[in-house]
Amino acid sequence: MSKLLEDIKKLRALTGAGLTDVKKAIEEAAGDLDKAIELIRKRGQAIAAKRGDHEAEEGCILAAHEGDYAVMVGVKCETNFVAKNEDFIKLVSSILEVAKAKKGASKEEILAAPLADGRSVQDHITERSGVSGEKMELGVYEFVQGVFTTSYIHPGNMLATIVAFNEAADAQVARDVAMQIAAMAPVGITEEDVPADVKERELNLAREKARKPENLVDHIAQGALKKYYKENTLLDQLFVKDNKLTIAQYLQAQSKSLTVTAFKRVTLKAE
Image (cartoon, rainbow, N blue to C red; front, top):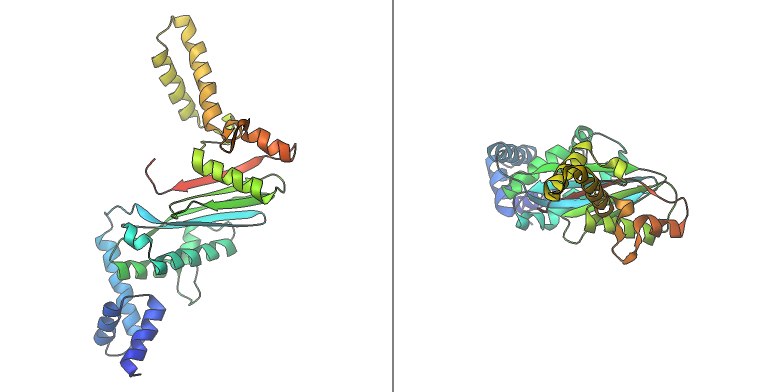
């Protein structure tokens, strides 16, 4: 095998760049691989800067859990074609492993953390941007902690959930709750978690719809708010696999004290 072919193979393995980009970088660097890598990286930086105002609405979200910690990460890109690329998904997976290892780290710490080759997460994202010609960013980073955790990735890698519980739970029960969150998009665990502005919005909408005597409007609005809670808070929602049970009842059937203490749900899809 000629030295050029060996260098191309090595550089592709190091950067994930396409054949044409790698060959061009090696030629411009006069065979200096370190300089060629830097050229590819700079190309990624230039593309990222040039496409900074573009919308990155596609991407890949992955999640994982271990013991008392669950985490999800997602790298956004511009097209579904890039989002489904095997090397792109591998990059997101490697970032997820870093996030698992660095429990509770900030997003900035994750971006600065090294991957296996010693270069930072941000450098790898920038480099992949140069390879694909698209804007890319670490658009999703969430974690939860609790006595017991689980995670769920919806097919397609565009939606994921992570959940924490107050005590150990059966793995299937925990997964059912994670899938419930994915399907039903609750706004909180209980009504106490619903933001004040959301409550006020729902009350105002109900008042506008009521069109009843003034003395009955608030009563009707409060009834509508309770209905909203039942449909949109996790523990009050009907279980999608058995609508005779609420999620609270489903959990209590496993353990009287079992409940959810935290969850995160992120989707790249418009809902």
